[in-house]
Image (cartoon, rainbow, N blue to C red; front, side, top):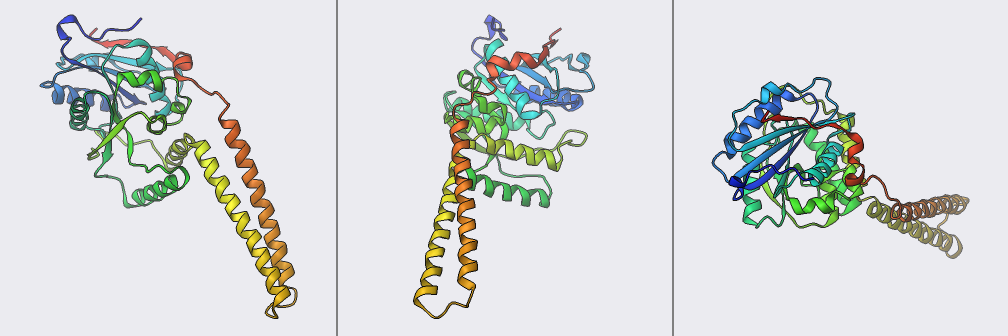
Length: 332
């Protein structure tokens, strides 16, 4: 049964469900919810907040979310049985929202404050301007990370574009129509990366520039290994595209090796330019390279074909396996 977050007196308001994955960042989440309420109190929104507890060690203190609130009508904690990571926590949250909530729009944002309440209001405004028919993503116009991080980020963007043909421009911060949930909830790719899965689904979307905020308190637990894994997860959503591109690259390389063999044989047979023994070594090396590239191309072919018939994790079907409880902490 759908949970109706609004009373009949609120039917003219846009019903917005905000998903916030977090792990032990309760103080940040508490302050962020209050900032969201202040930022949206004069807007025609009725907000339900779902805090996705991604295996926190410290449990939520419900008294910290006692209110009073104006735009925020209810707050729930979606407690997961284990730590899954941000992307998979978002997948669980989207599937839970599809199954349990009746709403008009779903917002996805981090709970640490780097996704700002002002940015959320901007996203919702553009969402309404588009008639609620497109997902709206925040395109980062200004980043606060170190120079080293930005260098690696641009290198990653280049690699992502080469492998997938898609430019990386957004993170999780977004607002999408509730109607999209029926599609996203059955996408296996959602289990690996939320934004990449939505782009891969070819659902209509747009982007607006929004500056990244600063963390409310504490330090991020995201390390270099986690960042690399996060990037690879995004690329994995386009696994079949990556496989085809690498297969084409390997075949092109083997073709060039074959051309090189013909050139070497021609030089050896038709000219006096070849050094004694040189042609044998070069041809042997090119033959080995060509065989290896053909083998690589074959492996990518079989990988691409197998990936298109495998049915993995389906969020709408499997999300309940990871949900322990969903207490409502506001209003009590």
